[in-house]
Length: 90
Image (cartoon, rainbow, N blue to C red; front, side):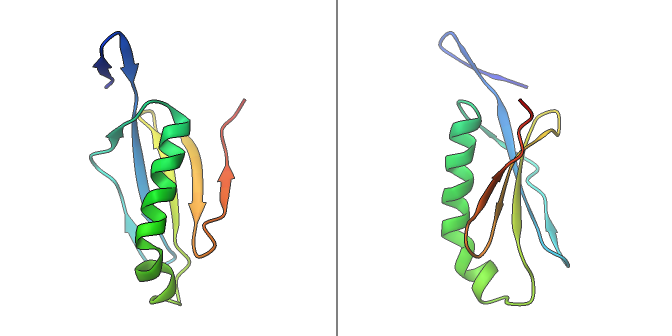
């Protein structure tokens, strides 16, 4: 599903969190203006939650996988360093 804004189509991205022991899937997703905006959104989420997920729960390494509507992985953001790995196929 795409959101029409004016004359532009905005894709929906999903931001799934996962560790060795837990999975927190994003079932709603978010309409954003492309992969660059999805990357910024993922970084902002990880900055907000990194203390709770990455520092207080020292046993699990958390990652956020950003996928498009087709389930194609666009980006992976990891804790605690917030290091990013771009996995888009060009």
